[in-house]
Structure formats: structure tokens, C-alpha cells
Length: 94
Image (cartoon, rainbow, N blue to C red):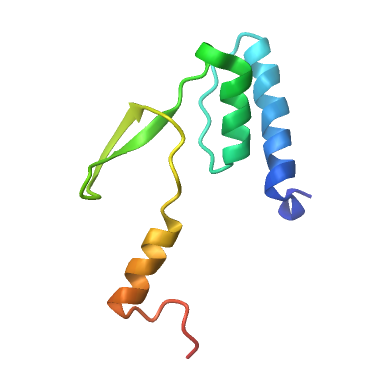
């Protein structure tokens, strides 16, 4: 079951499926949070892999545009910090 698959296993499954498609001449668009998978895909496919990332301005504003770029860090910790500083009740016990 995929419900018990960890990130390492999921990255390997994704790599095998996507690589088989690419090797067959299929153009693949893939949305993922699996950074291990992305690093290996870029390493193994060189110039054939294009990474699109969301544009984010220096002040943090999101433009909702995709640009060619490189792997970016996740923003989960930044979002959590903003919630905690704002006094949000997210994550607090009732």
C-alpha cells in the first residue's frame, strides 16, 4: 500500500516510473514535494530536465507565475513561525 510508503521509497518509485516514461520518449510534467527524487532526476537527465518553480518576490509576495529555476526550500517552517507569532490557535490543544 502506498499509504505506508516513506519519502525514500516514494522517490524511488517516482524515479523508476518517470525514467521509464522519459526513456520511451514521453514528455513528463510532474508536481512533487519529493526533493530526493528531483535531485536525482536532474542529475540523471541533465539538460533534458527543466524545473519550474513558483516565483516569489524578495518581500515574500507570490506572483502565481512559474519560472525555470532550481530546487527551492520548503516554506513550512516559515509559515509555522508566522502562525505562532500571530497568535493563531493552530496546533494548540483545546
